[in-house]
Length: 80
Length: 188
View 1 (cartoon, rainbow over the protein chains, first blue to last red):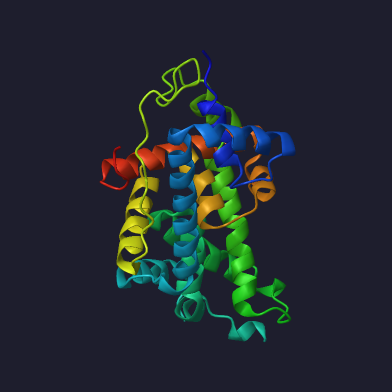
View 2 (cartoon, rainbow over the protein chains, first blue to last red):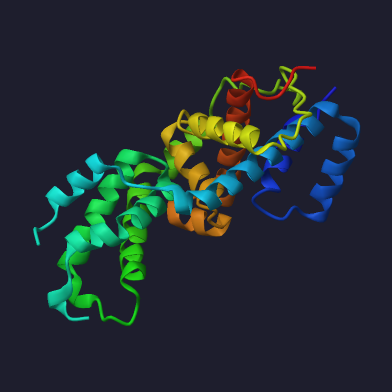
């Protein structure tokens, strides 16, 4: 028997990056309805996606050059 | 602003952190990010005549940095190698030839609500991203951390959409496994 899990996992990933076609959405929906493993996978991937986006929003404020990095760059630049 | 007021040392003071943050989001590697900031300030100095004062200084420098990042990523990512890594991997670690899961993925029932738990998990994801093969990491980073659109990444990396999606899928499953190995997600 062939399983649809591989394709389902791929579609679960794809839908975070593109719009699925109606046909793809239908196939995925039907498969997820009967496959607990793939539902778990879908939840995990979505959760990671959300956490990363949250973190990216914070990075704007958090990123800092440390003293050593700053010194390295300053030395490579023309002096005042 | 006149040319006389241009000063890379002052740019570093005033815009260093912002440029570094931008580079880190795009490529996620401290060494590379520092190098790119340095190259950007030097390029800005060499091309200071082209700064017409209409744009903000930081916007102008970020534009230079953006080009440098794209060049850097392009030189690191070559589609052919990427596809070989992604599709011709003979030891597909997750699925049997018939398409079924080889090993049951864990349940992932919990949704970390507490801020501390979310932060801990995000930290671990970051550590896991750093372990991805370089080219996968750069594609994944551009999409999930920098938040670039799929079309923009494909253009920038000269990737077909199909190969892009293959790489993203691989990277996500690898990250999921890495998280499970560090105690996130629970086995049924």
